[in-house]
Amino acid sequence: MLKEIQIVLCFFFVFLFAILYELSLQSGFVFSYTPITKGFLTQEDVMSQSRSIIFVETTDRLEPPPLVSCSVESAARIYHDRPVVFFMKGLNNSTWLDSNSTYKAFSLSSAMKNVFIFPLQMETLFQETPLVTWYHKVNATQEKHWVHISSDASRLALIWKYGGIYMDTDVISIRPIPVANFLASQASQISSNGIFGFPHHHWFIWDCMKDFVQNYNGHIWGNQGPFLMTRRLRALCNLTDFHNVEHQSCQNISFLHPQRFYPIPYPAWRQYYEVWDTNPDFNDSYALHLWNFMNKEHKTVVAGSNTLAENLYKTYCPTTYKDLIQGTEGSGNTQQNKIE
Image (cartoon, rainbow, N blue to C red; front, side):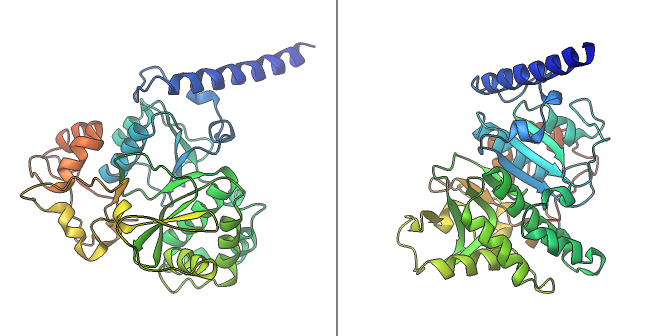
């Protein structure tokens, strides 16, 4: 009898904490000094409403670089009424890192009351999707682009199972995205997979996972990512060049203009780390992709440099800027995200 009472009480408190969490999101405050409810919520609790902003880390590192922290913080601020969920492969069920963590960036992210950090468990994630057979066959040690390929697969499975918006960890959010079902164009008639949004169990994501397996080629970078999204979209729609900044629509999917996320195209990525005479206002953009995969020179944000990236940090992720840029000035801790 006592055991039954304990089980009932356990479910009651989980339910109560979930309600308190939903109410707390309405307050508009990003940082919480007493995030007592977070430890009681599972990822299913947090992501049950198909409204999450999702990030993925497929390396084993546990200390997010400043750019990753900025991406998460900016999303938490812009989408303060939605859960921001960061899946990290380096975590496991026995790893507990919170706002008191010795990892400074991790501590910062954990202090944001609508940010949740969970282990990325691919074996479990890919169950009941077309990706599970591929995952059991592929030899990760022989894959040249495994970090990227596993990320491409994980983001599809997460959006399929939970819905919401996926973002790369080098995307700085600057205003809410007003559409639900969307892909982001990085150039005319070419889709990216660095940011996209769909409700859970959307047929387009299922088709993408099937294509992922059927046309798998790990030797070609992007074949499972932007090239996959582009070929699936082209199979459905008659894509044309954009006019103004209006999106294209096909099969109830919005294909958004490159200005929405890629106002600075990838050949010009260094412009983010340059000083501008007048900083652009990005009035036509919802978020900015900083093309960190292109950053082989490991350019970083430096306090006082007055680069475009520094000013973006100051505006959209001020806590990251204060703690990880100004706070580490002169310490040599300027590693940027080298993955996305």
